[in-house]
Length: 551
Image 1 (cartoon, rainbow, N blue to C red):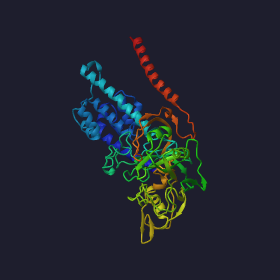
Image 2 (image 1 turned 60 degrees about the vertical axis):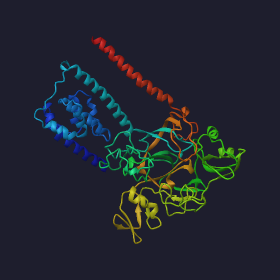
Image 3 (image 1 turned 45 degrees about the horizontal axis):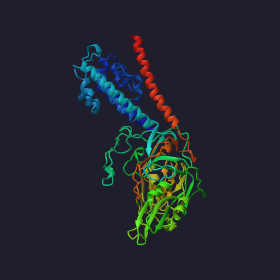
Image 4 (image 1 turned 45 degrees about the vertical axis):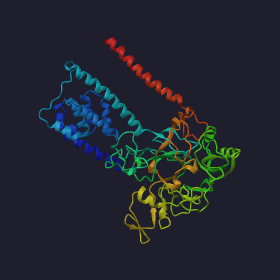
């Protein structure tokens, strides 16, 4: 409800600004000046008077789409009063209500005669150009509507979900799978997630220019939530521990498998996953993978192995006796075949010792032990437990309505929930815990939380590191792979870069069925293209025949 009240306030403010800056113009067009203050109807009148589709008015106050359409409608209105120059249009877009007010209160402004019979050739060409630009603008708006309100494209840059989702897979995500999460930053550049430019490793990400206006914000709200994530669903969500973006829906998107839901108990034993004390259910499209270290007398032919077995991120190091290879994700069958190669001396699965503490992925300089860290992208959650990625838990996932005990031992587990995800003030001083200024030893959970883990367990930055994923961070469920390109992303975890290749066999296949042999929906894509171009041809042909009949 807070979302819609805040949204209504924004609409009211914009409507007042619109009315103040255009009421005289509405009067000159023959309407009551008060109609300039009426949301949606004011733009309906502009579209009617400028001979554009009147239904476009419903787009005027939508998040992200609205600011684009408002700018277009303002330009239409200014042209109605003879402001046709490029500088007029630029001022209308950059300073809309200020520039329109100067025109509105100008004494000599009059309606422009729009009769095409009196237009010069130059004016007719300008009108055609405006029509073309208008078509391009509406195409961008239409694409923005699809992107914001229905489905979003998403690329797989890392191997954390191999071999279910491959590096270089490009997906469409259904934003309505678990109810639609309404946009929280309504003033933003279309198609950009968080920033306009990426400074990369050398710069500070916090200094990168944002693609949205931080000051114009709406609270979290989800509508039509008929389903929630279930165990084994592949889910797209916003990274919970993003320190760059405070807006939930602008944080980096991640894709993992939901292995445990609110109320479940998650555990890793010797690199194997358990939920509620039972081994995980491996679906048909999953392959259990583990990290292995291989020592050889001579160098392995990694490109040949890649061509044979597919995804093989590997680090190669030359040793005094030969070569050492650390493979991130090998299936048991692939590991057995590599072990049987004639130049392999020995091979072992990489498993962290039990209770070895908070560890990172990187070895110390002397390569004798793993470094300790409290970096949320490197250390195990929660930081006060002696767990690691192979021996983890048991950890119970918080559920909405749960009353949990808060003390010095449990605080690292719940502090992000209390202070960041559920927006309370939290203080820990002199051995006492204060929530919203009151000393307490318990807390009531306000939303459900999930455990999101990659299928390629030993090469996945997942909930074992960054902790619980709040329900409010969930975007939706991937629907299908619309493109798959091997070599599209550089793998920093591997010494070998896969060759560029389009994986035609993966295109337009569903991603969330759990089946080993997924159905390809290429025929639906082909039908949509045929209908699109066929409809365009039919409209042109019909228009041509009608013109001939009129003549």
